[in-house]
Image (cartoon, rainbow, N blue to C red; front, side, top):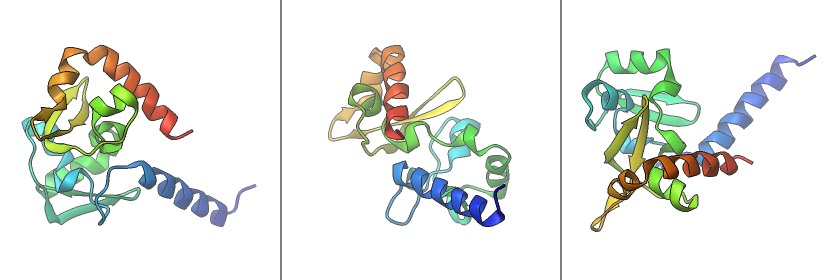
Length: 147
């Protein structure tokens, strides 16, 4: 039978493993401080505010307002970006963890995908040309990250 200490250490270990794979700034900030709920509510990238911060399993998210923060709490997995917040295109192309531009995104089947967009290289454009194939590969590559 498990004691509470065992469950607590398991939870801490799971959070540490998860955090290791997430795209977080040095401060542990996810999506460069953009509000994950706002992508879905307004279909645009909106910076969150520090006063509406939440630490969810090792990742700190900022929200535009208390309403978005509460919405997130009801179902965090519905709002967190896919592939730990790394570039979806790079994850699909070759399984790499590449930083993103939080303003370059796409919502597919109710899930948030983020993309690299710097130095005249918008990977969302490339993703759109072969989305089905890249998404399948990205899903497989992301699963390999944890094994």
